[in-house]
Amino acid sequence: MIALLFSCTIISNVNAEVKMPAVFADNMVMQQQTNANLWGTATPNKQVTVTPSWNHKSYTTKADASGKWEVSIPTPEAGGPYEVVVSDGNPLTLKNVMVGELWLCAGQSNMEMPMKGFKNQPVEGANVAALKSKNSNIRLFTIKRNSSTEPVKDVTGQWQEANPATVREFSATAYFFGRQLEETLQVPVGLIVAAWGGSACEAWMNGDMLKAFPEAVAKIPQAQGKIESKNRTPTVLFNGMLSPLIGLTMRGVIWYQGEDNWNRAHTYADMFSTMIKGWRQLWNQGDFPFYYCQIAPYDYGIITEKGKEIINSAYLREAQAKVEHMVPNTGMAVLMDVGFKEGIHPYDKRTPGERLALLALNKTYGIEGIIGDSPYYKSMEIQNDTVIVSFERAPMWICGRHSFESSQFKVAGADKVFYPAKAWIQRSKVYVKSDKVPHPVAVRYAFENDSEGDLFSVDGLPISSFRSDDWPDNRPIKE
Image 1: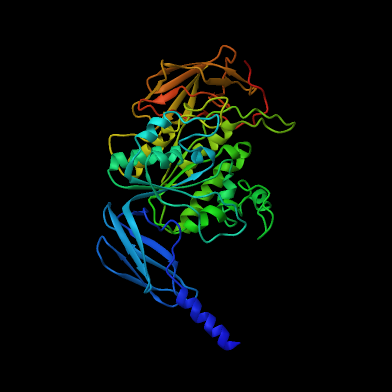
Image 2: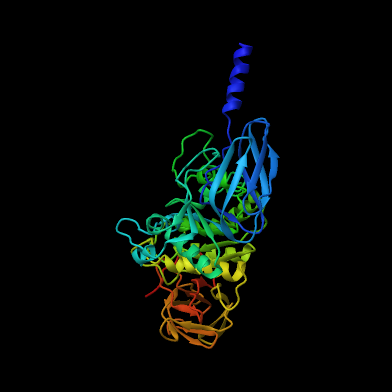
């Protein structure tokens, strides 16, 4: 029996070979000018050598008793294609490897939505954008949907060069983001998409991150237990799609999620902030950039429950807007001008992608002469019957879409009932008044499910919906 076990061990070791996770493969992009992490399995206890063709130097490590190994290698300035040879005596060669900028693109359906669109739901300009997409400097990797009660070892997907066929199936938002980066920086860009339509923020967090949220903790499934919802159950997408990527050396993250959390906005600012900090802690690569889209206007339907406030997605947008002020090295792409009442998936995906790119190009890559941040509500003051609203991040002041007026303001008096108001722009401020509210105490802008924003920076970036009050919204808005 002992001889048989020894024989099996020898056969197992002889047959062992270098293997690496799916994200380390032909056509991949590695982050430039850093120490990039690589890992995998090999023959147990054997020395593993990694030799990149950009300098032909060898970097060694040793596989442990189970065959696991990891190593960090220095990467040059952007360029390629290169080869990376990984060997424990039997070499594995990664071919057509580029060195450039690597971004993780995560979230729910508006990040997942491919260039070809969803049924009945197109992406504007997709056909021509795909037609012009052939570019070996842009590399695409889509992680296959996977929901799991425990962390998995690897993801399913493959690296592909951008061309009409591959871009058609790839995230439109992520592609437009990457296209703008590659065009501006003139370096290879790698995009890894981890997204699942309808997914909750809680699903992309692990148990430690969720400790402060008891309602979510109560829904975490037991190991090998039943998953109530494959995309909404807490921890299951973190386990199944994100966990295998932890430690991957990258530039940063773009995120488009929030629609599923619209009816529990009261926890979202803290939850989303905790998620960002949790990811950063696990990656151990500092406060990497994290840019995200604010959900676009859409008629979710106002749900009234006795004794509870009216549920309104503007509260979720408000929570999202708070996060960039709570967490360093973040930024929010405001989308008040791209949504539409009847559809949760805006047809315009170029605008979100390019606004995320503006944030990255300005804040991460330091390109001067462009603006990425939208103006932000600062304060209000009251003069007689008029509210005067001021903004931060508006050095060139603000403007309307086609005029110096806005149709999206409401004001309320001490009775907390909001009435539509006349609003006009004077230099850097907005003046708001209603004949029905002679003594205003609060102001709101586009603070409803499907309001279409009509206030912008001079650079064309919309201002988020906002409110000056913190009242529970259990009173009707008057027409």
